[in-house]
Image 1 (cartoon, rainbow, N blue to C red):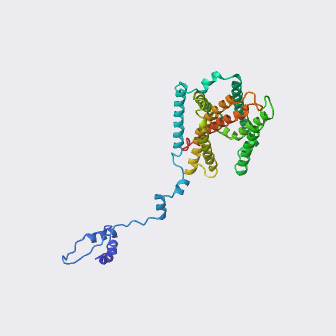
Image 2: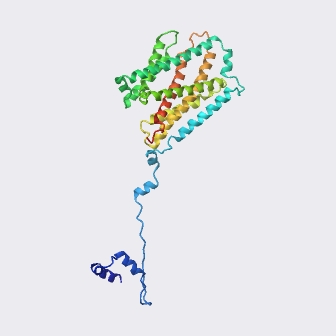
Image 3: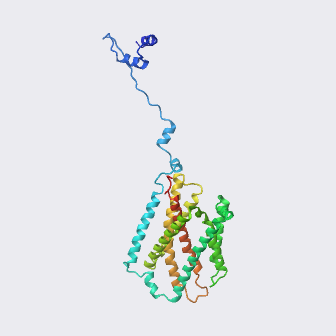
Length: 347
């Protein structure tokens, strides 16, 4: 029957048939009942077979771990960091209310300040005076470098040599500043301190590309964060945060490793976005904890350091620690507000 249909089909089409195609004719042939009831007819009806899955479809259905990590980041790549920062802000607000209202039964720094002798107060005033001057010098240096094209080109260069030179310059000037003995007035230590603050200002000069209004708001937010954390450290028991040194050191290693890994893994990959979130939000939480720790450590050092020691109390070295904490907090707040924290990913 199929052979007959195959022979007569061209004749029907040539004679001006009704447009019956081959597929319809074959389907009709399968459905027609034979005239002879005793004849045995086998109809083999096969549906369309699915093509075998290709290698690409298998890879899309189940990607390997490497492909997932090196693929594009998801929309929620920074969600965990934002949640951690929001949770830490809530805990800090609760701690400020708890210690500020005097609900703790232990003596706080504020309570001990009533019994401080004059030299302890002078030490703390001098320390925070150097801290304020450090912030001013850094801001002036950053503005001056940003307005000087040649210096700005040096600070924005990429590559291993420029990165290593920057690290060496920052660490070298800081080590020289802390190694010199302190003397009142203007001396070698004060000059080294000014150079160190100026170098740090040159390093952060590229942040000026974010714009003056954004940096102003970032500075205001940083002031609010620093003021709140300082209030918590003063209202809390005097040794509450002095036990955080070990965990903070471990966290510093993790944040530093994630920051260095970002050189090879840009935020355009899933793994790079996770590392960038760790560096931004994890660093913000880390240096906030360091600010609590360093504030109480400086107060304790000013209290127990001998008044008539052959080596006088060094307010410059004491101010550098809180200055570095505040500078790191400001850098991360500015970068998050500038869109590095995933706020402007869709723009």
